[in-house]
Amino acid sequence: MANVASQANVVAGVQAMEDQHGILVESINAIGQKLTLGYSSTRLSDQIALLVEFTGMHFGCEESLLRRLGYPGLDEHCKAHQNLMHQIKMAAHRAEAGDDAELERILESLRGQYMEHMERLDREYSQWFNSGSVH
Image: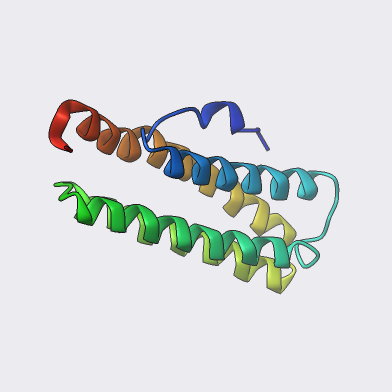
């Protein structure tokens, strides 16, 4: 699995969100690396459960911030979060079921979706913030 930490550079323009993005990317990378090293998915289920919990907290923080500031793309952003949460919960379910190969496939897909989300949707709200729309 490719490491994506170097791609998690400043996208959102809000330090708390950037810090959380870094934690999420590092968590996905750590799980992927452990799978590569031969850890079983059941052995990783607790770590994946923490990823699910932290991701939900991050999405809640981000959505709350965007809602308070009147971000016009909030609905699209929330739908993308829902899709990502579904993918993360699928990974957790695969880990609990002991399905290593399917877990690795889901994590790889999740990694791509998450990076695309940060590069496109999070960058959009960053540009909106920085354009002076937020005072």
